[in-house]
Length: 68
Image (tube, rainbow, N blue to C red; front, side, top):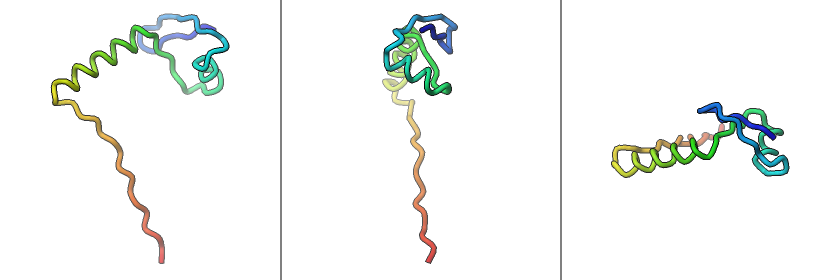
């Protein structure tokens, strides 16, 4: 199966029976990233985390009040 990287438009061959290929076939909204782009992003994220100025913001779930 051929998949195109969303960042660099490189075409990769993915094993048709792999889990990643199955996810791409069944869920069209899933996007493919090549290993080079994935490594580059993870490396830069780790560098930003090391500076101490980078924070990940998680969404806080609001508690629903029950109607009484």
